[in-house]
Image 1 (tube, each protein chain N blue to C red):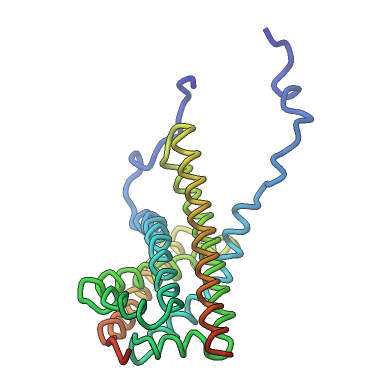
Image 2: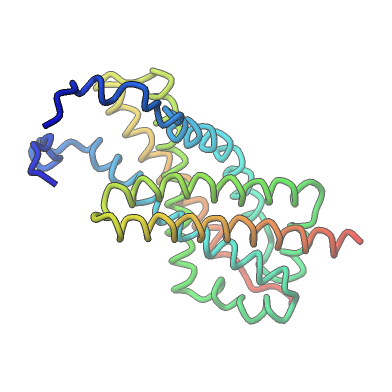
Length: 128
Length: 130
């Protein structure tokens, strides 16, 4: 039998040191993505065709590589936070939830890395 | 784990169309996470060179693919419009019931118009020169 009060058991274990971090980063990345998404939509839908030459020229033009890399990076970050909440809500049981959350992290980091790498490859090749 | 009381779930509430927008926000978000995979694959195929890109291109220009692409763009536009609505709420603006309903109508109208404009560009899209 434990005679300690619930308050006494909770005290001095510290907090998760995270607080509203997840919520806040989701909003910050959303605010960053709003102008980037509009820029991306206008840029891509304004292309005359989807051919290789057209697409490569657009990706490498001006500051497009920087904005594109930023878009992929922040989109993957924002998507990871969003998918995490969906998994926490709908996937039940410790093991399935843990596996789904881990998979989601790996996939989103992979997306961010390969997207940024692809943009850099195109930009550096056509800039040289 | 012991059976614990749960707060009432959405099924106990009378349906309001603002609830549909809320569910659609999450659904479009998940759809966009999946679309991001396609977008990155598109970038990667372009970075691999003309041959790899040409092999992928039918996935962008065939009619069923264009329909999927149009749905992804519609999801992006809806998530963007409704996301701005959420950001306004987070600043404390427009949280009254009448305001929330008005902004819901605004979001749906803006999304439909913007998505229609984007669809025009998507279905106009040609394969172009290799």
